[in-house]
Image (cartoon, rainbow, N blue to C red; front, side, top):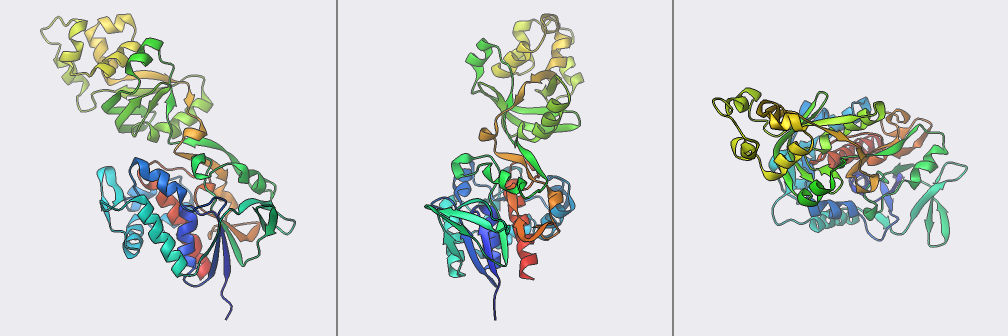
Length: 395
């Protein structure tokens, strides 16, 4: 009996999990342009190796771009299912801070990757290294280049899992987008997501405070409000309280000349409770740090974006503590971003992640135009789209 031959282009998170599922019943070949697979696993592991997030149901689904195909993928294979899959692979997990899910202590990223690779080999997956996707032929077959030879790939189905445009150190680039544009697919230009915000610091502020954290703050823009931490950098701000506000900042930068975020340095104190510290006192500016329990970086930042009149009036200084408006110049470049939006429009796909105009070609993972925050959600999106695609192909 003939089993389906499935080709997967790209050896990242989405491609690997699709290969694991499909190789149970199909012949699977992975074509990877680099010398190894799963490089983003290893790079991601340097900053804390969170594989998914413990959020479930609406707490999970609302983290992502709202689109039926993506929502179905997340519902069919959610973070709980991901943890079960990892457990079966021999990778027990635990829930850490902010719901992030990590391999149990002592399990390194390279070990996780090796367990996945061992399972693929056991199930007969053939991995072809140094095979770079370079476009399509007239019959819309994928072409790969190996050394100086160009090979057309013949299969029952071809799954593209080439990743987004960020993290070029892992092999990601934007070249593949032009190949799909030539097929006439609806695509969107790549843009940075989960990245830092550029702010025009004064030289003396930058010199003194770049590298210092802002802890227990709240950042808002429009209806988006995020609590967490940020880091002052040479170019502006980055950190876990910054990344979730990037989507509304991106939208605002396109729509208006000046875009602001608002910082609340005392989110656990009401405006009134801070004003209460002034009762019966003639507060001097030199006592602000002590009276309002501000660290030096926060105090300097408030002072830098406050008028002299507001700074000298304690009541107005309290307003700045609770709502300091900071103008944003731009997002950091794609090269520095943790993830990207853009790529192939979700509107180009059927429910099984095949292209509407070429049903033997499938696209999964970060090649697609969707957005999600850090904290395990990006990987989960890749896993979920891969699992749903594999489910349809197996059936």
